[in-house]
Image (spheres, rainbow, N blue to C red):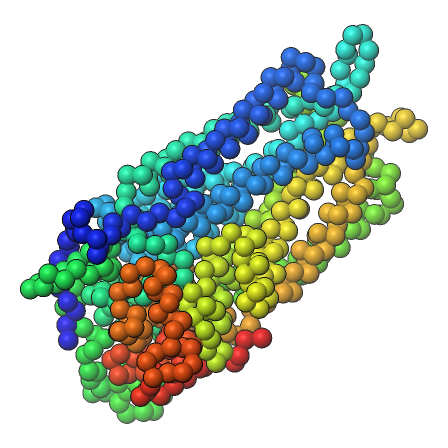
Amino acid sequence: MKPERLIAVEPGTEDQRHPPLDYMPVVLRTGALVGFTLWCLLMLAGIASCNVSSQRNHGLWDYDGVGGSRYFVFEFLPQLLAILLVIWTFVIQAAIYRTVPFSMMASERQQDDILQQLPILPRNFVLPDLSHFKHGEPLIGISLWTFWLLHWLAVPLQSCLFQPQYQVLNGQGIWRWTAVQPVGWTLVVLYSLLVIALVLLMFRFFLNWTGLRWDPVSLADLIPLIQRSNILSDFDRSEVTVTMRDFLPSRVLRLGYWRTPGSDEMVYTIGTEDPPDSDHLYRPSRPTATAEKRPRTADQGPVDLEQGAVSRDELFERSLRTPFVRYRWIVWFLEDTFILAWIFIALVLFIAFVLVSFLRGAIQRGFLPLLPTLPDPDGFSASNFLYSFIPSLIGNVLFLAWQPIDVYFRALQPFASMSGEGTSAENSLLLSYPACLPVEVTILALVARHYKVAWVSFMSIASLTLPVLAGGVFIALYYPTEGQVRISACIPAFYALVAFCAIYMLSFLVIWPRRPRYLPHDITTLADLISFLYPSSLLTDKLLREPASKVDLVTRLVISAPGEKTSPTYGFGIFRGRDGKDHLGIDRVHIPGREDMIIASPPVS
């Protein structure tokens, strides 16, 4: 059976059976982006007005000491407002990453290697992600680069936006909160760039189809997109490959409606007008005439060099059952060596932080700034800037460093759930953690008893306290008894900062991934996920054939098959594929008339 030849078609506007492929995630719709843009403009206008008013009125408000309500307004509230912007850009980023590959395949500006190279999981946190520039999406690339600047600079800069300054009003000297002019105008530029980035996003998504009927937030959403695809033969034996980037051939793909020659039936799928020449998925294998005397490779597992003739199928089957292949991959920063390093580094830094803070009463008595403290006419004080910006920047690095951990724990949970003895669709194929809001995913994970995901996602939000508190905890004060200017701390905020640092440090003990979270290869791209689905009977199951909506798909996944009394369960393991051979991937654990799936990993704790 050769792959079908598909002919691209567009349904008429009056065709009710084939709706327009223009679904857009809510956060990327024009109204939502306009609302976020207005929020950014309000922030920009507020900072600009503070700058102008501070210069005209010799400050903004009288200084009333450390720890009061005014101190909170000027030393902590600006960071809180900035961090809310940052968190919402995380939500926008997640929607961009999961939508753009489909949108590119649906547009006329198609690029090669979208399936195997363009990421679907956000990774624009500590380092900028420039991959969209390489794939002909400059508007997306500029927007993500601007988001990355915001992630790094917004909170640290807003932590040093306001400083006390000595002013003379009506012949009387008084300390007043004032806006630091260089910092304020830098933030105006930063938020102006953010507004431009959001306008570019609106322009990009307003003028292009997404190719989607609903939001692709789970593994189940991939099933209708590849059921009738004519490129699945390219994925033959791909589940045990090291990387899909080098495995798949380069093809220009299209997501949309197609029909086959000689038929008026329309199908919705990812396909190509030039299908592969031969269908490896259904082609019988031929043993090699001589032994393939090659050393062990990552794709093949161990090879018996003494055996006379080893077929390609035999090598593949050995790889399926080799623990080295099955548990080969975990994202690099969750490998055992790196987790040990993170724990050690976090512990050493925390101990050093506590010792330096409390040694000789440095926090209670203050410490010398070692830099000029007197503000200049623009309100800039070198010592106040240093002890606000640098601590906030360090806390911001810790906050951003936790986000990739959260992303991967969310994405790996369906596989971890299915690697036990199988589980329901609600706890596996339908999990949509990567697309959930930060607080939402914590609640959903607790309800589903995915406690590790719940804690990791909770820490992704709780860690925002580090840059917020660190940026406002220190301030330069004059000590009359000693006749010196010292850097003093807001004691309640400092103790809270120490507590959150301790929680952050201990949380590295929680992120140690157990065996079910290890996979044969990465899950960053669409091709990575399809490689675990291409041989599955889920693609030919009549019950799942061409669902009309997301609700329809969910219903079909959770109801019992004809003749079955129990709800279906789904697993990740070795199963008999559509071609009659064993494969490693996702399928129902039990199908009438077929041996149950072999679950090749221990239950999830």
